[in-house]
Image (cartoon, rainbow, N blue to C red; front, side):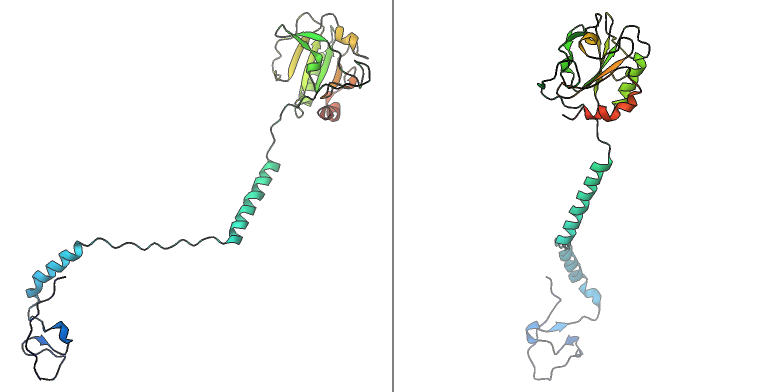
Length: 249
């Protein structure tokens, strides 16, 4: 730090005074400061002012004070967590759940005869659209729609069954008494529709109460047991409660 010009003079016995003397001196200050002389013209201090300004300019800037952020209280944190959990639970309830195909259970061993209500589906292997044989017992739970040759309303019933099982995602096995299965049905979800060919009518002969002229729906449970045989299928929408029950063992 550059000090203002000072000049020492011998101590005198004159009383101390805060008023400047006739020679510009300021008296009455602490002795260790020495004698301070105020010039008549402040321009005489131009060099000292420049030196002080240069010294101040060369100093590193002071650190800014960072105010601490106020922390959240425990009750506030608990309230926020509670709101997040409540909103998450509400979204799980309100948002639509994706439809998933029902799970297939192990094959049951009932004492009832095969091909009747309460018994297992007959172990028939029919040809699919890929040319390979498929066992009827593989499709569980499902609805076997047996369509005799020359059936007029079987295609309409098939479409209605697809719509009636949209929520349960059941597989519709369409068994037609033809040489080849239907490979493509425009406008229908092919993932839930399986087409099988049964030219000799073995399924109609192996399952009880199947109509020879009208469509018959065979409701198959998750464990392969037949829940109900519905000949001359009415409006499939009337079967919704029973269709939903097929997914329950």
